[in-house]
View 1: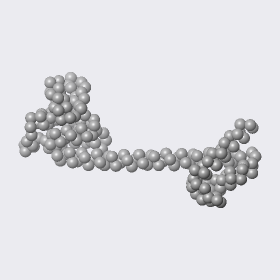
View 2: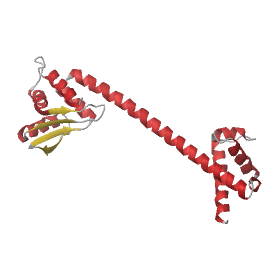
View 3: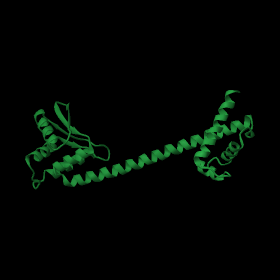
View 4: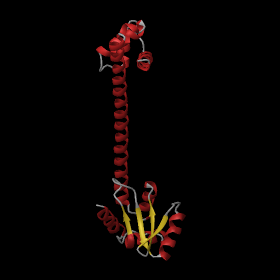
Length: 207
């Protein structure tokens, strides 16, 4: 796909109707001779494999367009490359690869959307895992207290929350707060559960 993408760009920019100034024409010719662009769905990478003289000229021209190319040696050639998505799009504009600039931008948007969705899913999954782990810790602490000293050992407000937590293992803290009389918020329920866990730790430490 990578080579196919690059080959299609070469075919596009070699069309005779693509009239341009000398700088743009030089960039285009460098790409035709030794240019490769990766599929933006996977990664952002554009490179030109050239001799030293042409690579220095290309770097100078790209800098004149406000770009920041880098260079390294490979197989006796100088490789001029760019890895920023915006700068790669700019090179396509310079070469007037209009058809593939549009395709490139569409793929960039698709990738950005997919990445945002993945980040959101990962964030929500992490939060869910954290919530489940916290609930399990609370339930284990309550069961430990019940087994060792009994839930009546707790103060009335803590005992009420402890019993509701045991009876409603899959309920959220907000839902448990709604079951209390009087009702309290999520933070209030969480505060009481932290106290319960601390009581369990204290009991464990003196056993």
